[in-house]
Length: 596
Image (cartoon, rainbow, N blue to C red; front, side):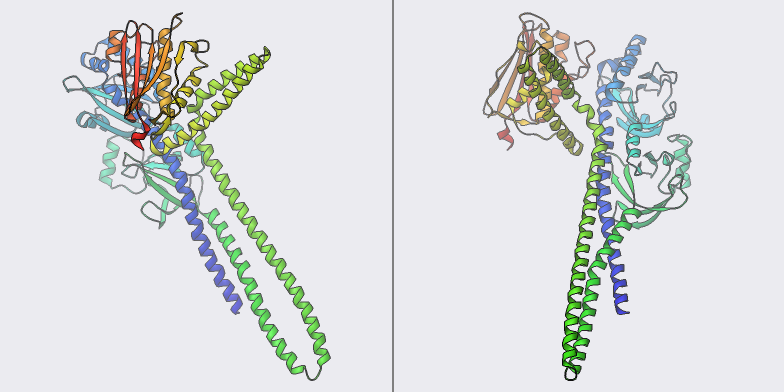
């Protein structure tokens, strides 16, 4: 009876330990998954937020709002339409001070925003009074939900002349969440679900809203005719400020299931990202494993105790019978010794079997952890694909050239192309590492960077586009010990912009020449990129570093703006000189020793 009670108590204790450990492990894994989804959400949110700021300072847009010239409005419509593909915004539109939309990127569509009155929208009123506003709402025309990012447009005297609005939709992000198989959703400060991987939960609430406030929200038409009913959740246990367990009735199911609920605040908003993970399967497996391990440990102890008790009883019996039957005692001792040997062998076999079982359990656990890691890598892979398009395009060009060289028997040239392709594959790895650092910190941190390798990589990436013209590029590379403060990837972006502009400026001129020289002083390193092209027109030169100022057909006018910002991030500056004899850009970078 005592043995049965001991085994029962051990099983209960082992089950509780296994359950607590499984919940803790599940919480840690789920938090990692939630942080990755948060990073994707932040990337989608931050990308369009700078667009209203840039557009609100645009002089042409300000003039259009003031004078309302039909020709200017038509140009503005087309310009906003052209920004959609590059910015990934859903709609960009401009509203006058009266609340009426005068221009929109969807001006060609039947449900265009042009001519609609938006005075009832909270983002318009707050942008007019506070300068900027954001609001998640259901579109009054499109009937599609999205985040409206608004910024007031002021004229040269600081007087408000209108509002520019960018609408962002999250269909692709929600689809990514849905493919993970784990419910994820975002709620605002009032507890209303804005974005979700479970479509039927949209515009439901995590708790009941008082009737007066509920009526006010419905009157605002922010969520259309949504009922704002409460989610089918029942709280079960609190695990800290931003976590707990809940019972959830999923769509299409009748019974409630236990889920781990994690909540993370979304930076820059009053939103929370909440993530649900099913508890029952992993907890049941952990409880089962813990009980098996406890049973494997306690059974040998009980068996050993029983063996010792039995042995003592037999020894006493043998002592009492020794004088009457010595020979019988010796026979029994021999028999008992044989029994003990067999028992020992059986115990060793059982112990070996338990060890093998434990090893298999550890192997299965490691395989599950590895499978989880591969799933996480698969989720983020789609998000980095567009960042490696340039190296991949270059690899394709070199591969095609290598095939041509082989067909012509030029093996040495083909081998050189293959070596370049191998270097580009290394660069793709660097880009993916840089993107992971961006997802955590928002931008690449600076550090010691050899300037020679930056120049070599920039030339390599331009080689396929300017094939046959790179002999016009005259570069004197600095020694390897010249090290500047910055990020290699971002500094390459600056130099690629400058080299590309210079090569395009000289065009096909037979005497065209682009010279690149490096000079250093105790404080900084200067990289000079000079061409003998026609130089900038006075109008272009005066606003060279303003957004959307360009002389190239189809250009957005953002290359030099971005380059200037990158250099400024690392404490440097860009100087420019231009006349009819050519253009000279000088990039001043801090030496790495100044930031050691």
